[in-house]
Structures are given as C-alpha cells and as structure tokens.
Length: 125
Image 1 (cartoon, helix red, strand yellow):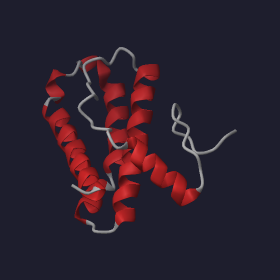
Image 2 (image 1 turned 45 degrees about the horizontal axis):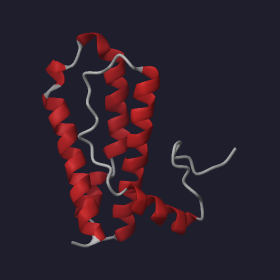
Image 3 (image 1 turned 135 degrees about the horizontal axis):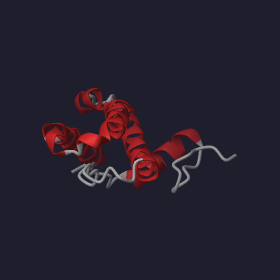
C-alpha cells in the first residue's frame, strides 16, 4: 500500500472516530458543556479538509490535510489536559496518528520550517 493510500485510510478512520464520538454523546458527563463545545469546535478545524483530501489524487491536498489533522489533534489533546482535566469521559485515543513523522518530514522539506515535536510549532520565538 502506498503512502497516499495509507494516509487516506487513516484520515477515514479519523472521520469514523468522530462519528462514533457523536453517537456516544449521551455518555459524556453533562457538566462538561464548555469542554465539549471546545472539542467540537476543534474538530471542525481538525477535520475540515479531510473529505476533499479523501477524494483527491493531489498528493499535496492529501498531505496538507493530514498534516493539519495530526497537529491539531496533538494541540487538542494538550489543551484538554491543561484546560479540561476533569473531562475524562471523552476518549481521543481512537483518533489515529501513526503517520506524524512522515507528514512532519513532508512539511519540513516543503517549507524549510522545523516542526518542534512537543509543541508542534514551526516557529522559534
């Protein structure tokens, strides 16, 4: 299986994980409204390019959508840990992230910017 196909498959898995989370919304603690709004708004940014990437044959469309997804997923996980540590009923471990290294390398080669692993930032301050 080539890299494009593997990445598309993982992006489809991300959409599936989002759908499953939506279906299980009733199992999430009702006192977590603010955290849930934050999560779902983040999902909007995280997943917005994926449908187009899944039907695209353009490698750059696929890779950019996946790069955006992986980095925003990492940011969401960090933000939840810091801002909503009580929101334990939302499990983001089902969202795949196995091709982060491939996408970070692609981004670095394309832009010349180094992706900092812990922060996912591409700028040094």
